Amino acid sequence: MTSVTTNPSTLLPLELVDKCIGSRIHIIMKNDKEIVGTLLGFDDFVNMRLEDVTEYEATPEGRRITKLDNILLNGNNITMLVPGGEMPDA
Image 1 (cartoon, rainbow, N blue to C red):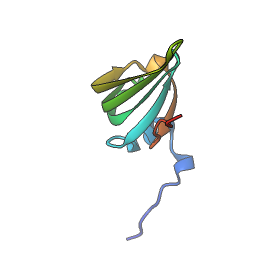
Image 2 (image 1 turned 60 degrees about the vertical axis):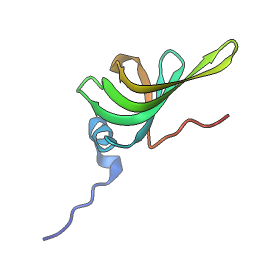
Image 3 (image 1 turned 180 degrees about the vertical axis):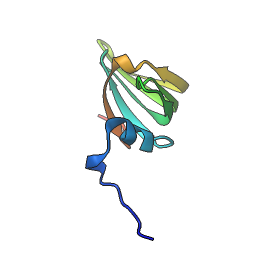
Image 4 (image 1 turned 90 degrees about the vertical axis):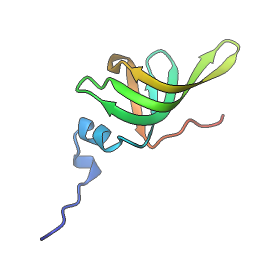
């Protein structure tokens, strides 16, 4: 029996997101919010459920950081996903 390895560049986008379930993901939203959390699941519209979430938002007063236990994101508002990404401290 031979083992088959999958080249990440040949994965379809939803296959790559599926491989991220259970791991940390950095999400950039359309409204200039950035979210880092553990991906619990998603659907065909890339609506996502995350846990252990930190939300970063740029405000006129500076960067606001909000901690959340769980969040459900609307896939229409997601601009970019960074698998395994963490928000930089700066």
